[in-house]
Image (cartoon, rainbow, N blue to C red):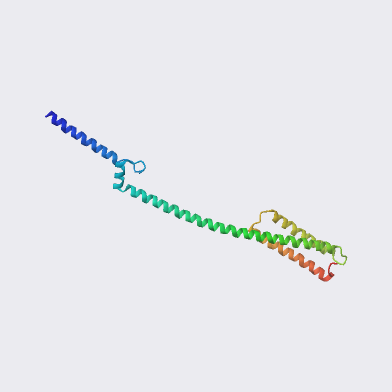
Length: 178
């Protein structure tokens, strides 16, 4: 009878050991790259691998959506940059035009100063205004051209036009410069 108890005990120990091995296999890793055969079978049976695939696909979808949003934002930023660059180029051209017209006006004023039939105080006032326009234009030209400067450039254009008109009025009365 001792032998049968030993055998029964031995069987119980073997069964318990087998169950422990199976349970140990079931609690293994869920990472397919590290899972053994029993872990792999257990993960397939429990749906763990499918769940990992779904999580990865969801992560991919979110990443693609974020990438698309960032691409759209980049395209919009590039369009805004191009528009601002064009506006800056136009302002720079307008400033160049003011400079050229101001140089012509200052040359005309210098020639008018040689005439005795023209009010020298009026000429001095116009020369002072032309100098102010030149200084403001130089200040703007040496700083970074910015779309916010559009109002200042427009003001310089108006002032230069007024100076030109005043010179034209003087020449209308006094006659052309010879």
